[in-house]
Image 1 (cartoon, rainbow, N blue to C red):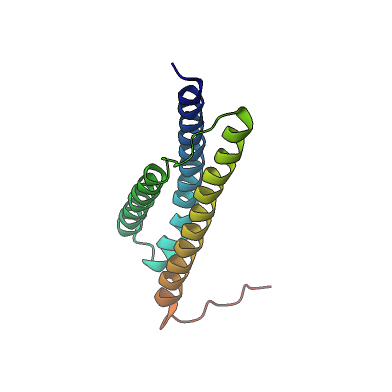
Image 2 (cartoon, rainbow, N blue to C red; image 1 turned 90 degrees about the vertical axis):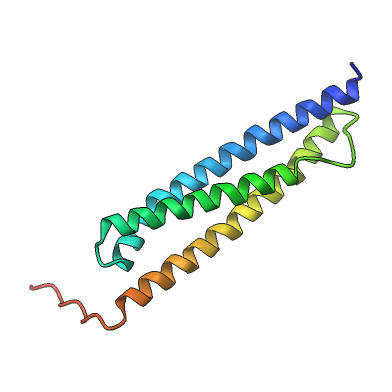
Length: 129
């Protein structure tokens, strides 16, 4: 087997494992932390909040998996270990930036849902001293 092909397979394997691990970690964090926002947005309706949370996480995983797969191939094949590290840093860096952007989009959507849910609600009473 050509050494360049070996390095390419190594690069692709590392890229896939690291990108998948980061995607799963971010997705689980968003899923767990987004639930309270959704519960508030849906006035405590747990069934609706959990349903929307599940739909959001499925969409998040699908978009990220598709992006990861589309970004997997490289026009340049690594010739040295340094090339592998440089390609990986660019590829994983792009995936992390996309995850960050998607995270902020999720925050904006969840905040809009939460804010919209609070319109027309009476203000909370101040705590008794």
